[in-house]
Image (cartoon, rainbow, N blue to C red):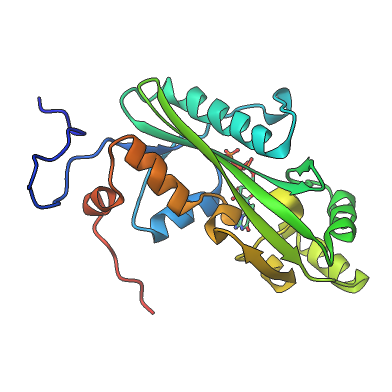
Length: 220
Ligand SMILES: Nc1nc2c(ncn2[C@@H]2O[C@H](COP(=O)(O)OP(=O)(O)OP(=O)(O)O)[C@@H](O)[C@H]2O)c(=O)[nH]1
């Protein structure tokens, strides 16, 4: 059986090559939506990792530790697959802010974030048969100077409670983000250019994933 990841013979035209099964080790609907919109339809196996049980000295390291833990927890169940684990935290003055869960915590976060900048750090770990390639994306986010009425209205929607950093870029929170510096996908949950580099480290081209997943032109 030829190795599906063997380099194409020299001079061979770039054509689709068989690729390993891609598994997203995440319950995040946003990560799955980003990958699907980018032409990739992974299987989803939620890791169930207890994020509170792990720590790290800084937000970027924490995102990486958690991404690795999620990928490793799932890889045991899907031998041979390419497993992607991710974790996102907002780095605000060096503090790693995950999901607020509670309305009062979301309010407190927004009162600390408004009119300022934070860095959304997303750890990525791509693991196959014990070989890991991992990295963190860092995207600076500039928050609008929202007033109390806006904070209350946004918290009341419930959206900020279940997302890292208590905001979304692509949802209601978009009204309150003045701009980003870096990859916007890394804020939503998976950095596509970073994942492209991790796939290449595993010998997989993005175009091969597209080939495995016929492109469905959106009705726009
Ligand atoms: N749609 C959207 N979701 C965001 C944004 N920022 C953070 N999130 C989500 O916030 C969640 C961060 O929590 P994580 O622990 O990384 O992931 P999770 O949703 O708990 O899922 P697991 O990977 O199974 O742990 C993810 O689902 C991210 O997709 C954003 O700008 N837009």
